[in-house]
Length: 186
Image 1 (cartoon, one colour):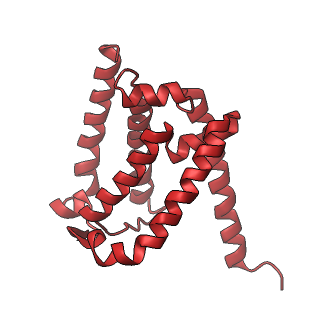
Image 2: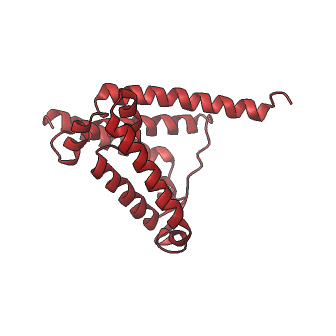
């Protein structure tokens, strides 16, 4: 049983994922968002480092993904969703974020920095939160998670336009928001 093409491809994808994860963690650390004080400052609306990094990542990722899609390098597989899924996901994420002062990505970066609060509280929070969600999932999927179901709809699909008709204006709005945040000193 040697290496089959499927196994090699799977391993390659995992290695690429690991490489991008390490780079992402490094950039989070260099940006300062693995620090508890920066995260709490964002929640208190006194430090806007986190939102600047998030918006930069969104515009970069959006342009990159849609450019690769246009070139035929990737095929998007949009996950279906609902208002209920977004509400429950947002509540779980928000409670964990507010209680600990980290999100899942910054927990990993903070652990890499050696912060024990992220290691102990973060890993415990992720495991407990995932366990509770998994235990409640059978009931949730029949109830609130299906409320406001909209399927795999995207904005270009909703408006029935080429992807770039939505991507370019959204990217420009994000860049304008970033410029405004920087120029106002926020």
